[in-house]
Image 1 (cartoon, rainbow, N blue to C red):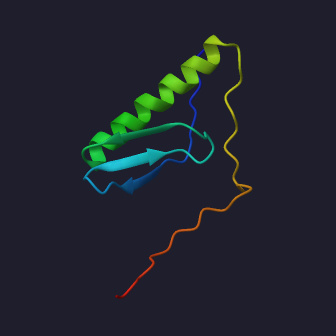
Image 2 (spheres, rainbow, N blue to C red; image 1 turned 180 degrees about the vertical axis):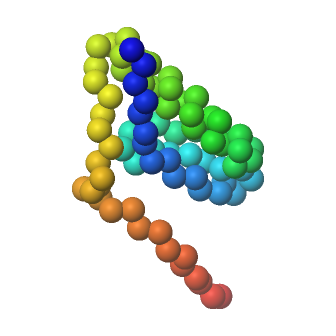
Length: 81
């Protein structure tokens, strides 16, 4: 039986170009892509591998916390010199 899992992915522009992808509900799971499309594909592949590894070890997939204990804060910081 196949089950579909959904997790929030955060796509952040990388300084060297492309995007770095993290999953707030899955600490340590990180990937990247040269473009947004590539980063999306890499995120799906990384998530699949992560969940597959958990299943092989007999561990349950974590629930995505709809109210993370540490809220994500995004803001732009400006400095003049």
